Length: 372
Image (cartoon, rainbow, N blue to C red; front, side, top):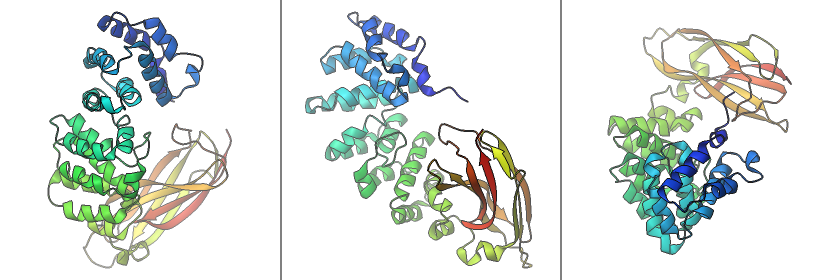
C-alpha cells in the first residue's frame, strides 16, 4: 500500500524548509517553528490538519505584521514548488482575510497558486465575500498564467474534493457560468479538466442546466467538445436519456432488452476473504435483425458494497464504451480486488455483482466476503 501523503512532512522536510526561511529572514527561529508544527499530537494529524499546523507555525514565527510575513514568503516561494507547499496559500487563508489585507491576499493567492494550488485557500474568501470574489474570479479567468485561470474554475467548484463545499453555488451555480464560458475553449488541458469537473459538480444538483450548456457548446470547438463529454460523465453513468442521446448512445427505445439476446455474469469464486480477488467472466450476445447498423453502448459491472452499518452502496465500473454491431458477441474477463484502499474499506457480507448496458441491469450474481 502506498505511503500516506502526510508522511512527506516527516523526516528532514520541515528542517530544510525552516533553514530556507532563515536564510531569507535572519530573525526566523527554526527550532521554535519545528516545535510549533510538531507539538504533541503531530503524529495523529492527517494531511490537511498538518498543512494547517505548518501554516499556523509560520504565523507564530514570521513577522506578526501580515504584509511583512508575505514579503518573507515571497523571497523563497519560487523554490517551493509542488503539492507539499500547500501551506503557503493556507497561510493566506488563516491570516489574510481581514478587510485591510484584501488586495495583498488576492495577489498572494494568485502568486502561490502558480507553485502549488490555492484552490482550497480561496474558498473561505468566496463564501464570506461572494460579491467581491465573483469579479475577482472572472478577472483570474483571463490571466495569462494557466494556473491562475484554473484557480478561477477549480477554487469555485461547488463540490471540490477535500475542500469546503460552497453551498450557495450548490443551490444556484448561475454566477459561475460566465467564468466557465470564458474558459470553455482554453488552450490548457489543465484548465479544461477543471471546467469539466466544475460542470460535473453542477450536474449533480442541476442536471438540466448542464445539459442545456452541453447542447449549446457541443460542436463549437474540439477542446470544448472534450469538456462537454467529461462534464456529462455522471449523467451518462446515470443513463440520463438526454445525455445519452447527446453523445450518440442507443436510445431507450432501443433498450438493453431489445438489443441483448443473452447475458451472463459469472464469478471464479463464490466466497473470498477481504484482501483477495475474484475473476469476473461476462458474456453478451446482441440480437441480429439483419441490419448493418451499428449502435453505441456503455457496458459496466456494478458491485453493491456492504458498508459498516450493513447497508449497501452500488458502485459501477466501466467495461466498454463503444459502437457494437448486430449479432456481436462479447466474451471477456476482468479481475476485481477487494484490498482496502484509502478511498474504500471493505466489510464482510454478501456483495451483489451486476452487469449493466446503458444504465439497465441485465444480469447479476453474488459473492460472500469474509474477514481476513
